Length: 472
Image (cartoon, rainbow, N blue to C red; front, side, top):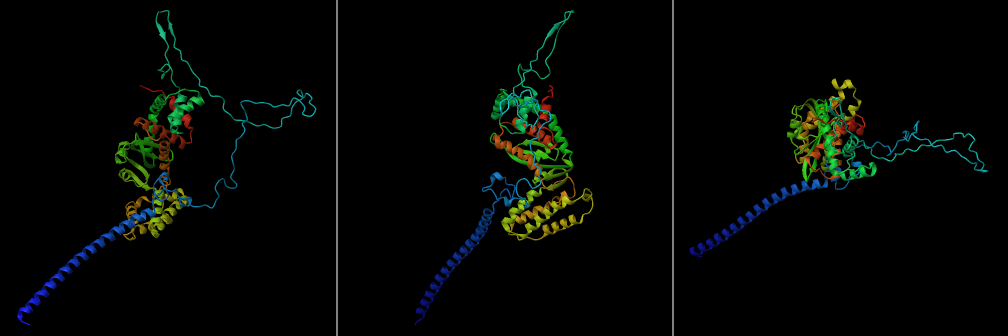
């Protein structure tokens, strides 16, 4: 074999090796692409697993702040935060029942005296009867309106001067509704949540009083205007209270979302409507804040901007969140946190008034357990649990505040109840039609809720307001 043949063979080998290198490079690029694609698929798979876990453990009214009406499937009773007591539902053994009691001075007495003998038919009407038994029937008489006519007269004095009397203050139209109808309108609106059309029907069919929808609006405007000073007084009293719970919820005004805010305690309720959920609303209504107040709320960030003595996070919200996290991750951390909260609630029931102002071993133990729990390291893969831990660590000083203040509740259920009345009103009527309608309802509902908390008669109190005289 000569040198030219060797060179030719070498060139062929070089060409073959070059093709093999090209093939291997192409394969390497394919492998790099596959590796990159595999990495992306693993990442996507992790995200999808995380999303799927949320669907497997959805949030509902038992493990979050989602209202019961949004639950896809209503949860079982065993999912409630309530713990089993072992008692059967209904009245318990030994419970004293209540029944209608007879009055000592009935308005009317009807004597049923026999006139003839059932045996022989003889007239026994003149024979004195012996009382055997009595029964009473409670009923309402037919209701009809009372129309009072006011007449004005004039007299001419001997000196020639003509003196004319005047109508009582507040009488302007030839025919108007009196304070009882005005207060009943406010009562039906703010206490019984009756829509205007049904209120018209009620006045017509039960009280024989014709009234239009515009008339109802006018009466509510008048009553709310009279109630405005009391409404402002309630706000001022709330601002100076040692304990205040607050919450907010969405409403509808002509199809647009608005926000209804509540500030309340065990004696007062103050409601206010606005178009935003931010700190601006708090600043406008309480510019001086609550400097001497423990503010109870559900951890909404706007409340932490308020000038207060300290905060108390709603433990009912925390327990529902822990329920969700427990369903999601089944981690012992959530059980430990839940136990601290429940033990704290039980401890509050045992504390004497003086215990709030001196060291208590059980309280110190709970605080140490909480500190240890909030600083322990969790797996970063448990994203929502880690996020919850970070939030609790940030607000750790506001979790067990209720163990240092005798009147501070561990939850914000009072605010939830105050807000619920607004939701019931919206459930019945659908939405508000004007800001004036929103203001009227919230003014009257604030006063109504305050009256109820002080165990007063709502209609009587509204009637007192209706009898106020409006000043120009």
